[in-house]
Length: 273
Image 1 (cartoon, rainbow, N blue to C red):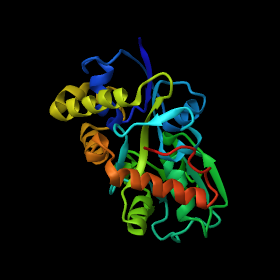
Image 2 (image 1 turned 180 degrees about the vertical axis):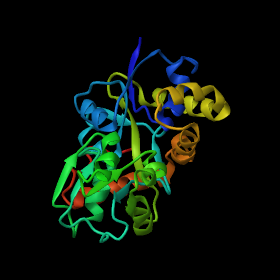
Image 3 (image 1 turned 60 degrees about the horizontal axis):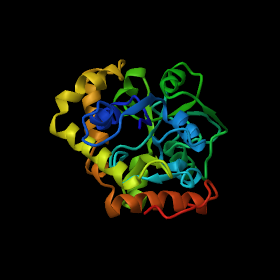
């Protein structure tokens, strides 16, 4: 039986899933892979479209009735949070009165921004494909942009400046790492324990032979220099990718419980573990 898998084309996902996608994980079924931006996978998962799917942790309250959270394969860590970027290095460090481009309404980045800017919310929010945000801010189309992924390494090339590091704010406020992207298994179709074994085996295969993943990673990150792709992987693929552990689960629960208390998301429908 072939399973459907949806991940982003970002280096951390292609690095992590290289072995699984290429049939290198013993006893794992073949994968029919879709590569899509996380806003697309969040929306598709709400319809139960994929067997295994990468989504934003912020989207979990809408998805856990259909999917189980896997304890591995996702993106969670320190020093890797979203950034709010602007053109003006002297800009007032809040979003009051501004139009902000964001990469999706159920992304962790947007949820963090709403928590951070609760007292000074933006005047307008525009949902914009990730790759259009920095050029749009640089061109003056938006006053600010919420950026994720490799934008941490490239925003200055667009002449932009960081107004806020939301991961740094979250870590300082909670002492916890920032939960970004999760891997889910569709209930009734995929056994989550078995799926976790496949994904964890794929993670370890990539760590054991990173050179084997390079061609695949760069093929799906065509606009990135190899050095930036390597930085991206080093930042987003870490111990939490192999196992969320108690600290990882605590971070996810803290984010979603705080969001529910603020009325930004529904309460979690089922326990995470």
